[in-house]
Amino acid sequence: MQVSYTGELNNTCDVLSCVHWAYINDYYRAIVTSLQMSMNECIPVLRHGALKPYWCEELQELKKVQLMRITYGCYVIDHEVEL
Figure 1 (tube, rainbow, N blue to C red):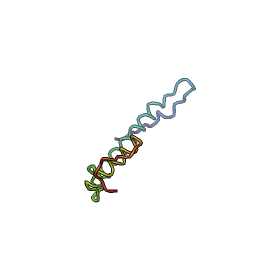
Figure 2: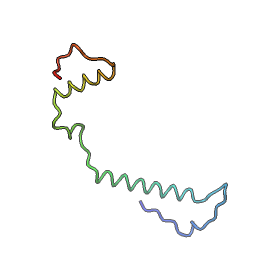
Figure 3: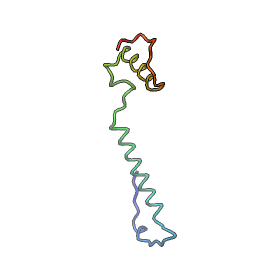
Figure 4: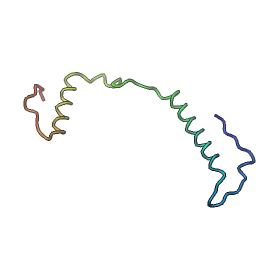
């Protein structure tokens, strides 16, 4: 997307009306579009859990117990997880 305004930017503005808002918004949209295109091309997208090769079922159970402790403010007594 190319934005080019020549000559029209020399208009004068007063406090109540500015003729440059449309130009500013166009430039802003062009910058955001460029950033989004760069993001899509350059930043890799990983699936959920791709960076956790060490995670196993036992750790999942420990996480569940800890979340219950935090959520309910108590200890889980009848759970078969060795700490």
